[in-house]
Length: 241
Length: 241
Image (tube, rainbow over all chains, first blue to last red; front, side):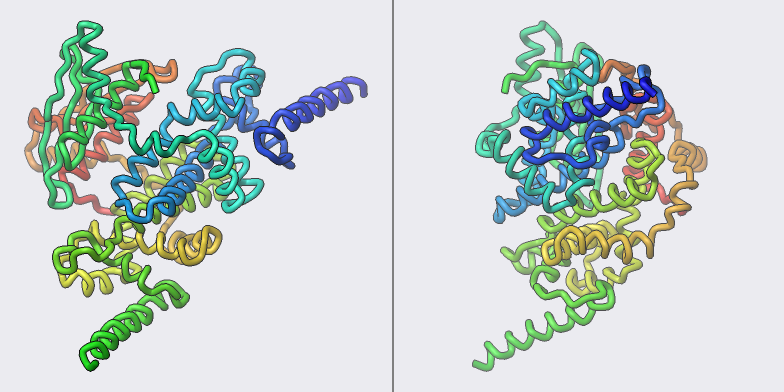
């Protein structure tokens, strides 16, 4: 009986602590705490407690919800901008690096490091953030989650003007890094084809003779930017904000 | 005065006709008919009436909404499946080809061909469908759009069991097509790197010495499937359902 009670108290107090920690972050008290607990349970921890559900399903759901909320937010904020601009702005907001930073600034790192017993990577932060959005959605539905994301995330952590004006010149960042590190770099057009009756270009970033990344676009410059952005991520080149 | 009236009647009757056409498709009468009209206005038609808003913004919004609705639907339908399965099922449902087919079966082709004055492509169908979802969302919000999509789209046009059991073996489809057409094909691993501390493979589909597509995945076989699927789309290889 004692054993059961001890376990009960252990989990009870663990739940209580998480509830207390989440309250200032969320601005409300989560009812289904087990759901929110799952949001912080990364798959790399399954070795310790096999069979326990990880945050991957919640992350999958949260990723979709977040993406749509941001899409709608931008759609309404910029009634006169075309879909190319909106898509670009959205990907700037929901990209992994931004999500990791937001999660860090929200203080999810503290909770996560406790759950992960120290084995934390920055990618786990973004995952937990998306999973948290998934949990909020399950508990409160679309409208409330939308209000939460707009008020507590977008308006708090995203400098929309900066994103708008900042030209993400990935190509020049990559060129600069290669020059600094004495690496030979080439942008090569490896294919040109028709898509939807329009010319489409496929370009590759080749560093030291090795193809690092490719990208396709109707515009060669845009394809180069996308390929450069991928290469920056793959080569783990630090980007100063 | 007559001229004004004639114009008024023309547009009035055009609106009326679209409303009548949409009623059986939607199951309700759209209030903001101009919004729904925009959903069928593809950018390729801007030559005829420059300055008129096209369906691109609505498509951007609808694409996000649809993707999230499908994500949530699968999340609830398969409580015990992992996020890999859910992601795969989702992309099977929201892929361009499926959307084009759904739009066709919904009868959007008839409306679209009138608006486009005959210059219709199958890609325009999928675009119009997504734009229509965007319009429904603006008019009715998330919950109602979700119910509409689940009842009138997913349960009506998507054979979930077939999608589940059907193995999309893109690689074998591509190999078969190349063999039939006497084309040399190779799947080559062009890079192996670490991502999130896991081995990641980048493979390329090379047909007749030309790189057609590439894909990255933690699993080489999955990367090959994705690259093959891209190649099938780029080479416009017909896929029998």
